[in-house]
Image 1: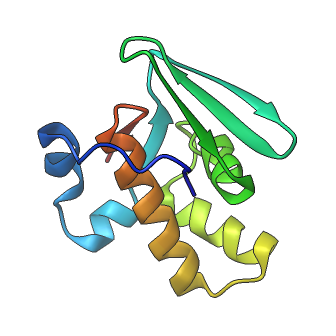
Image 2 (image 1 turned 180 degrees about the horizontal axis):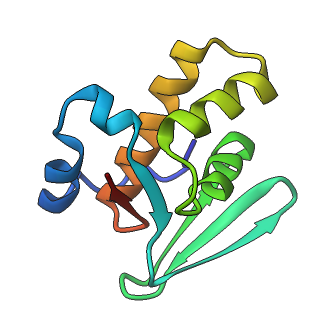
Amino acid sequence: MSSSSEGELGEHACAQLSVARGAVIDAIPCHGSSVTSRALDGEAILIHAEQKKITVLNGVGARLWELADGQHSIADMARMIATEYEVSLVKAEADALAFCRDLAGRGLLTISS
């Protein structure tokens, strides 16, 4: 979903996401405070000012980013992706979890339970 493959999960992100799957899927992701984003031609461009890095998300990643608004749980996001992109809920959950883990590890998302 992200075109950048850099970065490993930070300690904080690992701690946040190392709880049981049920708690993780109910977690609520939110854009990091130092991240600015713009939608462009069905993609999203994320600018992490503190790290001076840019990440480009494809269409599905852009939709997940849009849904990571502090209001939707990862489970909510997965259900919407499954419906909108006609994929199985299991696949959408796995993708949404991986997306959130990746972006949280790079400081682009924060996760609350």
